[in-house]
Length: 136
Image 1: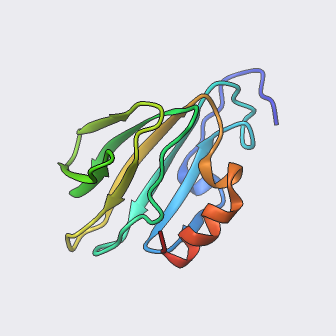
Image 2: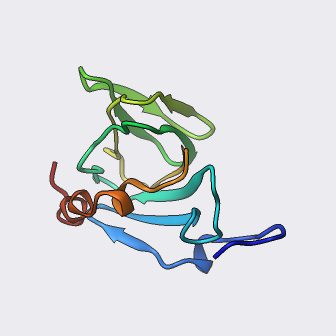
Image 3: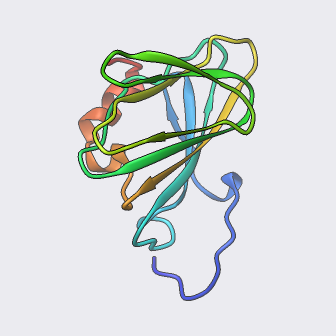
């Protein structure tokens, strides 16, 4: 749905996307507001949860921005672990593997921004099926 003016959205305004160990909220996207250049949303990872399958994008960059909680970004070919907390941002160039885990006992809230537009689970439904089961 294309919009002509400013659009305000809250996670409560969109259908939550429940996957294993987390809930995603796709806020800004071609499928929600007709965005042409980016996709933006939020993931809430439950305590002890891991976002599987991790993945990379062949033609998109992505940013994670931690709002609340603490967690670990799993990144690069060597799957290095990068601790994150409130106000930390992590950038993933095209082709760089990334995932999230929350080894702590409080929820982890992370914003994600992808450009160009398109959510990985919309583009690859088989990956979404794996994410629903929590498998790599």
